[in-house]
Length: 185
Image 1 (cartoon, rainbow, N blue to C red):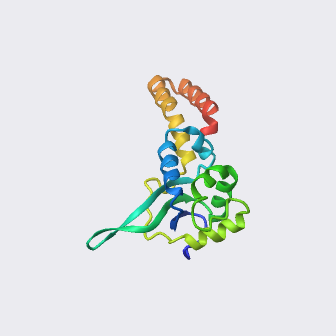
Image 2: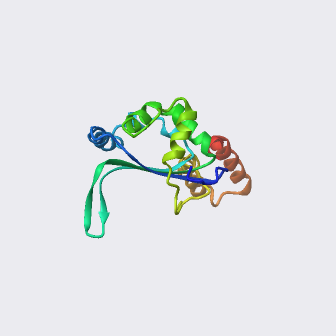
Image 3: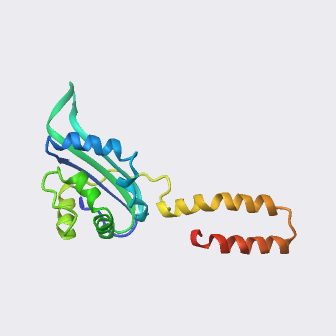
């Protein structure tokens, strides 16, 4: 993985790989429909440790004189997450194998999501590493943010309804709040 430390924490992969020319129009469709069709990302919430993931097809490169057409299209992929490297890749391969095939099959030497050992080797070969890392919520996973968003309205209501309540009434309301929202706390 670009020689990066694989211990737990914030991690990133940045990869650029050639793709077949015929694959480029397919990826345009996938990237256009992806945000619009929930089927493509329906399993993504199961992978709550992901912070970001971006793909783009590169057809030309900047030069000192302007732009130069790439000899063949290339797929740029950048992602970052919180956690260990191997479980991140294994979880993606297990939870979203068809989505991986739909994006990566046209990439040079893509081994497929299974067996995962071949996938590890391929990712290590294409990873350019990350020269920088930014996270607006470095210590918070996607699941934690989603849980906080579910709890926030109920907490605001609790405060509004019981701000001036007697201590015993507030304690009872607070305990009920904790029971009702325990799964998100």
